[in-house]
Structure formats: structure tokens, C-alpha cells
Length: 209
Image: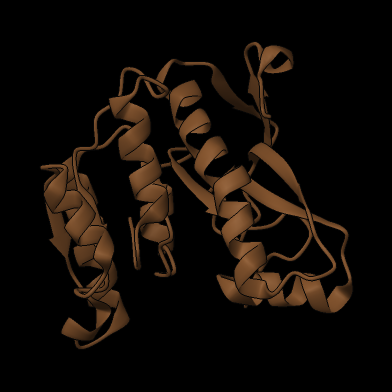
């Protein structure tokens, strides 16, 4: 599920192609934005895609039903939010319990929750004077950035950073690495959720560098 440029989608496609993600194929790319470059990435990779915007519907409830049906028809084992700015409706979360993952551009629980997305996260990090930021892959529940954490990777903040520069470095050093790694771990049955916490088989041996 994508809304914009699709850099995380590209990282997933590349990781499947080069073997960093195993036992996995992308059955569908969904976008709420007809102008998202992510759709071009899907086309180039020969991946089926669907574009459906909330603006096409009279109300949010009708859109939520349509979105749920799109996902049910695709029948994925895992739903990946790769820069998706649509608020995931509760019906979808309930239909895919612990089967939806998201990448957030900070070290949750810092700089997350309602209103923290995209460049806004990095602006707040710099305003606060934080020395370390990073990215988090987590399961999606009915809250905002409150689901069980799967992987995190820190990235140092530099004194001369702008929000755009920090965003790019976190993508390159963290997001594009831990999202494919999380998908591979899930695809190979190494991730379990117990008491709202993630247990990863072989976690201590993971190379997050």
C-alpha cells in the first residue's frame, strides 16, 4: 500500500530480486493516489496494481468497504504499508490481525502518533534537538503507531541536517534495510507476537548494520 514515490516499494522489489527477501512475491500494489510514482514502479516490475481514492466515494464508510474488498480479493499473507498515507480502517486491521506492517521514520515511541508522518517527523526531531533518530517497522493495530515493534535501526542526527537531508539518510540507512529484513523474517515464519510484544527466532544473530 503506497501513496507517493514508492522508494520503500522499490527497496522491497529489489530485495526480492536479489534474494534478501525469500519466499515472497508481491501480489498487488494499492495506491490511494493516481499520481503516485509508486504505480510506475509497479508497472515496470510487472506487478498488478489498483488505484482507488477516497475522493471517488460519497463517504468514508463506502471507501473503507471498497478498500477492504480490494485487499480480501488480493488475499495477501501480509499487507505492507510502504509510505501509505491512508488511515487504515479498523475493519481492515481486524481482517488482517498481526498481518499488516508499517515503516515509521523514527524510533517509536519517540516522534510518533497522530500528526507525525513524512517530513513532519524529521522537522520535530530537529526542533527538539534529538541526537539520534531512525526507523521502526511495526505491526499495525487500531491505534496510531502503537502496534508491536518488529525491528528498529538508529541513525545519528547531524548538526547541519535539514528535515530533507535527515529524511533521505534515514531512508537509506534504516528504512530500506529493516523493512525488507522484517518481510523476510515474517515470510520465513520467524516472527511471533505474544502479549503485544514481538519474538523473533534468531534475533540476537541479526545483522542490523
